Image 1 (cartoon, helix red, strand yellow):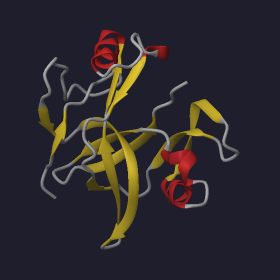
Image 2 (cartoon, rainbow, N blue to C red):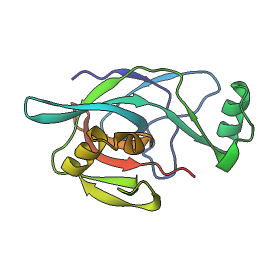
Image 3 (tube, rainbow, N blue to C red):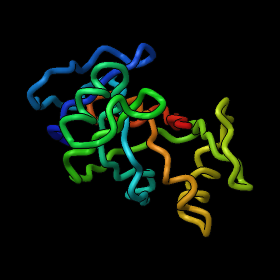
Length: 161
């Protein structure tokens, strides 16, 4: 799979240093050993391998969140000191490493769990495609990429209050 340009993504202390913030929009590419935030849109099996279709977003905090919210006419500073920006609805598909666990922050009963817990990939796929899919897909997920084909090797939900 070729790399696709994606909109500028913000990083957090836990994220790998693969992107930067600038006042003007910039474009970067998904690279090996990168971590990005995205909304999961769908999943499918292709040649016996699981793939996710995702929409990348920016997760901003501090002054970056304040500036982005103000620029869009939203409350600034934003509540809870974070702001999610999705200026493009481009959806991209990536392979997922088999056998990984997915860190989720919503319990099967619909309550939130800020500490999160791990679900085996197959159970998470069943959850995001089942009758309660909306409660799992409402969260953005940090996706860790590795390898020349940008395989997703880790998935972790971003908890927001």
